[in-house]
Length: 253
Image 1: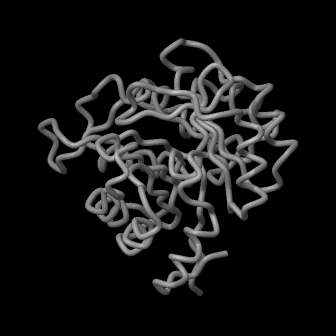
Image 2: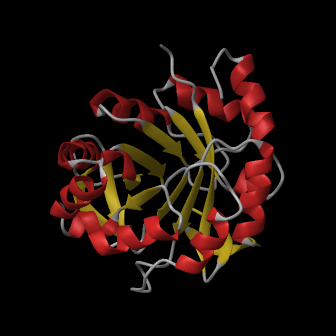
């Protein structure tokens, strides 16, 4: 059975507002997260991803009230990440209305956290968020970063993804920092490499600029495509993306 691909708008939130930048830099205001979430739900989004992009940098928790208000407006799966450091943080986010929780920096700092979350809540709740960039001396040519892309590690992105899956991650959110906000298309090489090593769904993120950018990401092996600025600016709607995917023979929901 062929599984339909998912189209997922991403709300990058800082100080209670949706923001967008290029290569994770120069963030600018893009609107109210609750209003945007409702708009995308009405447009036919399959899921929503909500990332508090400065929570880790500012060393604070995700803004739970915004999660709650968002969850009250949309009735599709909601993934929330940013500032998640413990099992208790996950419990609180799920209690606030999240369906899945994205973990990044805290898992790199303490990998057993992944197993603790998966054991308590199930792998289906746990999304490993990977902020990946080209470079370093890793064998794949892709390294993992933390703190919203600000801090480089020496970890190979593929090795870390593989380890995270073994520890219980149920999904990989693979964001290309090099492509982020550039509108030049997804990093299909990165997607393809992740697909080869992953036994769980892969979400492609970073680089969408037009409807035609989405089918190549699915062809490269993504199970879902995620985008932010093209939706926030009104350049594309969810329907535009699904129509293009359907035109290219991709099954959509």
